[in-house]
Length: 81
Image (cartoon, rainbow, N blue to C red; front, side):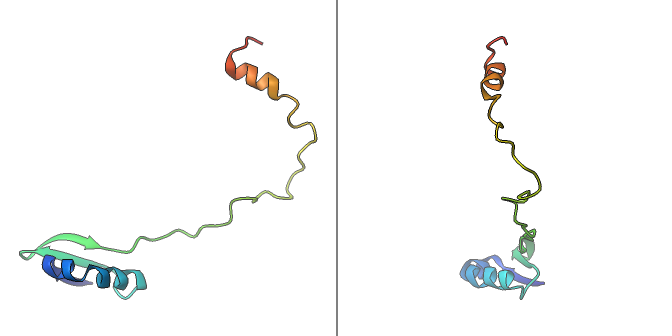
């Protein structure tokens, strides 16, 4: 953990952010008149797994999957069926 003054943070924000991003610093405290006012920390990104097509090959889509579309639309649109 590092501590920098407000003026130092303003003058070197790019360097500070690069340090955080590179993992060189786990957090940086910014102080103003000796009082902590902010903390720079990395955002922990969650591992993203492939989501599109995740179920590919797990089931068969029937050829008549769209056969009830008119009835479903009528139900939503209040056609009274």
